[in-house]
Length: 405
Image 1 (cartoon, rainbow, N blue to C red):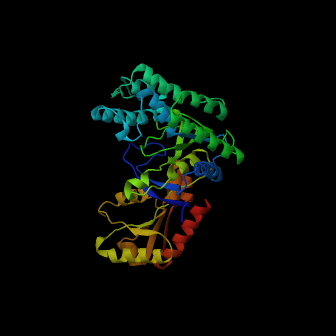
Image 2 (cartoon, rainbow, N blue to C red):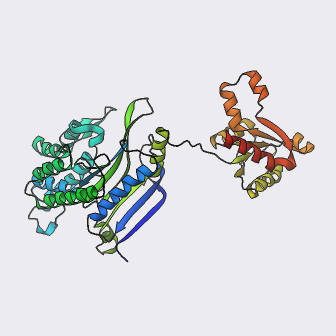
Image 3 (cartoon, helix red, strand yellow):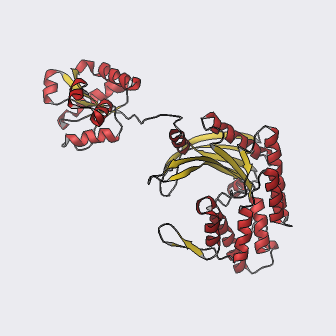
């Protein structure tokens, strides 16, 4: 039955340059309301997003949910192009080639102004007109608008007032007599009223014309959650952490695939990015713990090593045999380090003959190597020899000690 609400979480992928908290593979949490045309559903998504951020430890003052409406932007574009790029093409008396060029320019404008928070008003103006050089010195071609057309877009992006009431007034002035633009402003006003009735203040959710969202399938309200505190990037420069979630209304998307008109709105939260933010704020401390690695001293005794792994796994301990070339033992320990392994198991011919195994506490070993003197290193050995029968018990003891530390 519709309308219905759903959520899902899982891995997704994107093709772009990784950065702090941004990965090519990452976990994303999606929440959607499908079958509801009312913007009350959009207001609910925004409220849920604010609640979610506070629940996981992002305090008020460290985030803001910013809301806009694509219809408002389309209203501004109507004043630039003279028609609504989302309206029925059959009703437009224009040359098809010119129409196609204008529609392509419409999409280019959306992509350009979505960079507002990165390049600022002047950067957007340059990209909307003749183009600009990026930080690397490469020249990026502009969209080709005139200076007066670009000025209208910039005025729209920067018309956020001191509060939602003032912002909505300025948006009405920006869309002029555009019907679609006025409809968008009315929807934003309804969202603001609903959120205010629930007690969400301007320190949580605000109307912000600079929010665009680059994807072309959004049809109405769009929203973005931004973390406002500063972090250091890979070059030690201060910058704001930025967006951790975004979404909007996509009433026409289902119809593209099924032919059935289904109104929908939803948001996606970047889980990995949110975790990175919580680490930056010191709200969580986490370290990756990999499997216990059983090293291979004699490839002809692989069955013995697999037997150790089997015992550890049956005891509920993650474990694996080193499956690379065992010729260089140092490479096996490097592999264990890269896998964030807590313990390495070593059994050569001598250990086999004596019925013992060597267990190397890799976590303690790393800590000792960082700062310990020779005397401290001798007093706190990180490698133990135990009877083969005590393998599982000793590994458990080492892991327990690491957790306690």
